[in-house]
Image (cartoon, rainbow, N blue to C red):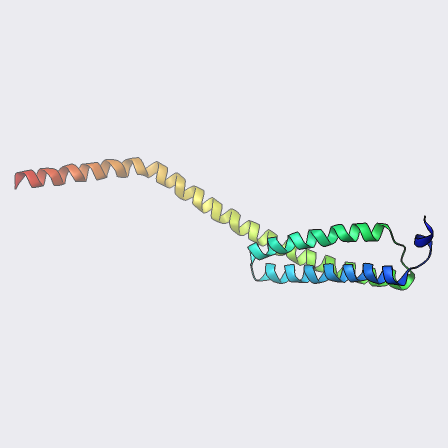
Length: 137
């Protein structure tokens, strides 16, 4: 451990806690986007979230926190995880909804394939019947 890690650098600690607070803000925004079913915006926000996580990984690995900072970090992480759970619930519900829509679409396509050849025959039959009617007049 280097000398800077063995002492508690208040500026570095605050920088780390600020990064966790920014991650919490991002998680809260993602949660709101998921509740509003703004899936495209959620994906865009997730990119920002991943970048913040990478920044945190670098900061967190190079720093030792005092007891107060450790407590604050734990509070922030707990709030982040609460948002994460809710986001996941929304995503699972969306996945299930899309699964149902895909199932309906596949059934419709199967029905179309099964009955389309018959419809094509009846369309041809009706077209022939119309042509015969026009010739006889």
